[in-house]
Length: 143
Image 1 (cartoon, rainbow, N blue to C red):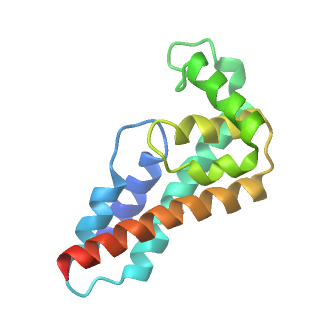
Image 2 (cartoon, rainbow, N blue to C red):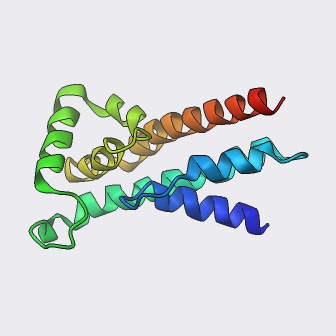
């Protein structure tokens, strides 16, 4: 149970702007003998998506704090992400898992008032696909 909580917390924090690798935690747990891969995938995906919801909510409701030093996303990164979202549309949220790019995209989705349900669907698909790929890679490597 502790491992699942660690995986959830790591995946959640990794979806924010803090530099944490949920992939390494997932890979280590998948590599263990007898690991319930479906549960691990569900926990990692849920934690990571919920972390992205925090970014979305910050974009939606906290933009008024943008000029503050502690604000998590620099204005230039937010402008780039918002521009990409306007040009590419909501489908870009499938790339929310991409390092450096994904967090500003989820924040920009909140700023641009992307509705929560489409946000959840697209972000979940992208993040789950990444974790499935990692899991399959670890299983192939471990044998």
